[in-house]
Image (cartoon, rainbow, N blue to C red; front, side):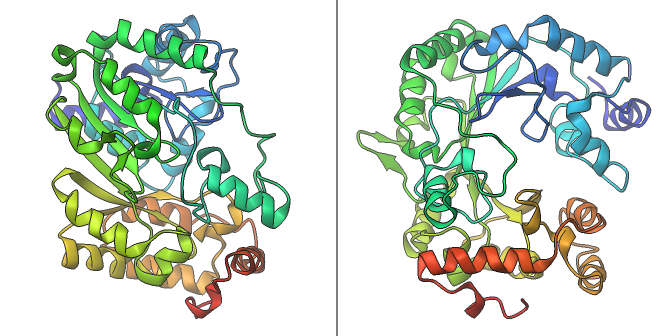
Length: 378
């Protein structure tokens, strides 16, 4: 095992290597396998509908990617991180390097597979439509287009039962190689498929697997299943909770969340919560310190700000006026996750703020919930 100094030196010399193509299998709700959740689509023949996870992971194309990385050749799909590294830390050199260091072994693999559907009871104003049925329904009603402002051609049909079952069979066949599973959605705690997958994992293997969720925490159970039923089965069970503000602003951003129920669930599930994940956008960038303090003071929970809205593009903080960017760069200089925030603020605008305002006005009319009464800064 490399020490911290050697790891930093390795990443300094190698401008391409990332542990994720060696350590995780990621498939999204569009049916695409990617090198990680931040990577661009690869454009290969492999999809979650025609190829099982470990067959994709061990494919000649993935071996070629890994070999290129080890030789320092940059990968087109990794452009997000390369761009971030021009001004600071990226996901590659930041959280992934801290999680894995330098690891090229194939015998301990993590899974992040969006195979259980995209049902979600929330329609967060910045969520990718692939990931939420409520979001798609709202965009269709408001704009007559479930993919409003996204370049994607359309929604991939969910896996058929046969395709889902083949995927699960492949996971169970290789379960001895799995060290962690990150389950997301849709809203994963409301997806029966993920519970059925967990139930199929033999206890002798489950005790070696760390289980984590990306959840909106609006519900803790679904029909006969409860998340608490799996705490003792797995080596670890942790919840990463999506949370982008508090109070009325949270209600608008993550519409139609029940704030009282959400906060009650924070208390009920506190022992399982690893962190709150705030996705930084135009509607919370001025309030990050207040958001952090609210959840720390009231619940003793830590909030991270590494996730940055980059689509729809007009919701990105890069579109702020220069005077506001300068003020925020100064304000957050010593704030947690500053490098990710800074990187986006330093980028040139792609849209003017009027586009964001028109979009939010349209959502407000449909929701009968006026965003302008909450955000005086706009």
